[in-house]
Length: 234
Image (tube, rainbow, N blue to C red; front, side, top):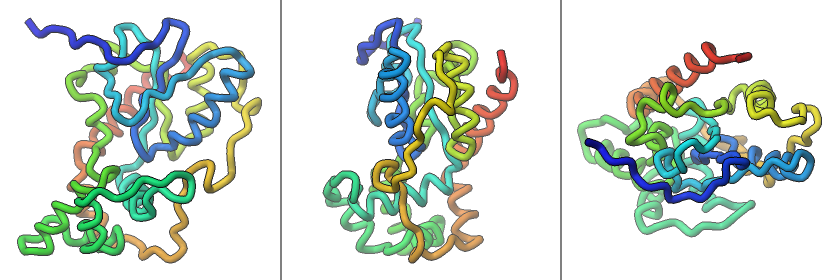
């Protein structure tokens, strides 16, 4: 019989865990969470990028956010290219240094994926070396594949529908606040937004390759949306 893995995160029954998948509006969510605790007394704990669902205590209330995989890849690539600046600073690993030396832009790397030559091999190694691009969203749910039916979240926030989904989260969590009561940050530094003014747009080849590379995340996104459609307004 499969044994339950002991929890590695301490969360009380009154708290709500935010399962923080990288590059999915987590900074904005954390900004709003501090206001919720101050105004409504409900503590939302940011579990950090390393916490997977199976690490939460049994019965913990939680939520998470998701994002279109191509958009998330782009954000992750340039966030790490800037070493997290200007909001934070995290030096490149040796592997990231090599990846950004070989590929200046996200489109360059994406176009080379699946090529059966040296550039293709370099691209596959590079995308797995950059911390954000190496992680698939579904990886946060390893060992808990049936979580939507067995241990469902309070709600899911899609980065593309942030306002509506966060409002529904407040409702599902029985938090005595409306979304209009909260102050959403518009500051690029606070929200960790990238400036893509000088960034090349993705080619059709790049998008096709990324959809293939992140195929599991596209399926995962669809699963989440289907669950949301079936549970909206309950």
